[in-house]
Image 1: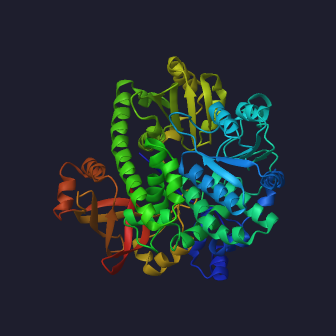
Image 2: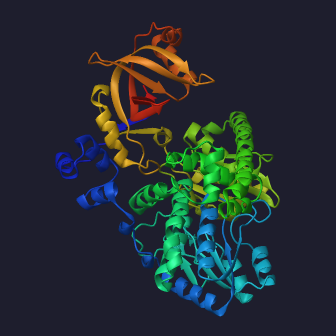
Image 3: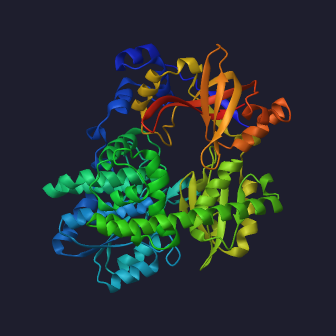
Length: 585
C-alpha cells in the first residue's frame, strides 16, 4: 500500500517560465524541489563552479591550512587516514594528491574494515608513531575519535580532522563533544557558518585542497583541481548526498569532466563495465562505478581501490579494474543470500510487528550489513539495523526512513554501544552480543513512529495526461539533471489509463511493455521495469483471477492509475519518447 501526494507548492509558474525560457510544468517541478527565488532557479539551472561556496567559510579551515603549510615547510611526514567506502577512498585520493603536488612527504592509510573497523583507532595511532609520522590528516572520519586523537597528541603527532559526520553530543543540553585536534573541519559543527552543511567527506577534502591552492598559489595544484573535482562528484553521489545547492553543481560539473576523464583507474572501470565514453551518468556513478570501488573495502582491502585510482597507465589499471568488478559480482551474490536469510529471521521472529527492525545474522559478512539493511528497509519501509558477528563483538549498520533520525535515536540508547556514528538516515555501530535483545526492546520502546509513518509516500510533481507529456517536455527535463537524492526524476500521474495488452521483455522476461489507451482516447505504450509478479497479483486481485494472463494475451481492458516518468530512449540507433511506469493503483 502506498499514499500518493500531489505537490502543492505555490509560485508564479508562468512568470518563471517566461523568465527562464521553460514550460510552466518545469517551473512547477523546480518549485517542488524547494526553490523559492529567482536567484535559486538561475543557480539550479545554469550554476557553474564559481557559484559554489568559499572553502574559507568552513570553521577552522584557516587553521587547517596554516598547520598543513607549516608541517610541509618543516618537512614532517604526513599521513592521510581515510575510510573504506567510496567517499573515504575519494577523499583520501584528493588529499594525498594535493599534498604530493605541494611537495609534502605523504602516505595514505585506509583502515581495514575487519581488522581496524571504522576510522581512527589506537593501533593506527601507534603505527603512525612507530613510522615517524609527524601529522595525521583524517578524511571522512575523526569527528568521534576524541580518545584516539588524545593518544596521538601524547605521541607528539599533530592531528587535523576533516569529516562530515554528525558531531557526537551529550543528550542533556545537546552539548557537542569535539575531538582535541589542531583543527576540526566539519560543516556539521554548530559553530560552523558554512551555508550548506550537506556535503560529503570527499567534498570537504576538495574544499581543503582548494583552500591550499588559493593560499599557496601553486599553479599545478590550481590546474589539478579540475581532476580532483571528478572524485568529489563521485563521492557525493556514492555517499547518497542530496543533489541540492552546491552538490548539484559539483556533480554536474564533475560528470562533465568524468565523461572525458584522463584518470586511468576511472577509464578502466568504465571499460570493464561497458560504459561508453560520453555516456557516464549519475546512475553509473552510484550503481556501477561506486559499487566496484566499495567491493574492495567490503570483501578485501580498500587500498586496492585507492591504488587503482592512483594508477599511472590504462594498462596497469585494466587488470585491477577487472578484479574489482569480479569482487563486486561476488558481493552481489552474497548480498542476495543475506537478504533471504534476513527475510527468514523476520518471519520467524514476527519482526514485522516492530517499529524498528533489529536483525542479527551472525554468519553474514559484516561488510554487507549496510546493503542488506537497505534492501530490507526498502521492502518494509521500517528503520532497520542489520547486525553481524565481528572479530571483537557484534558490528552492524542501520538504514532509516523519513521521520526517524537514526543517529539521534542511537544517542538515546548509546549505553549499548562500544562505538557508533552516522547520520539521520544511516549509521554504524559496535556492541556486545548479549545486549542485542535489550537494544531491540529499548529502541522500540523509545520509538515514536506511528502506523502512517510506515506507509510509503509517493510524491507526484504534476498530475498530467500522457498526451501532454511530449518530446519537447522530455528534452526540457534534461535541464534538471543530474537526478538523485534531493532531486528525483520528475514524477507525473494520470488516473484510469486502460491497459489493453502487454508483452514481457529482456533476457529473463523481467520487464514489460504495455499498450494503453488514455481517457482522451489516445493510444500509447508504457514500459515497466518493476516487479511484474506483484503487478500481476494487483490485476488479479482488482479485476479477478486470470486478469494478468488476459493482459499478456491481448485481451485486457483494465483501468489503472499510473505514476510515470518521462524520458527519451535511444536503442540501436533509434530514439523514441518513453513513458516509464513507477507506481500504480
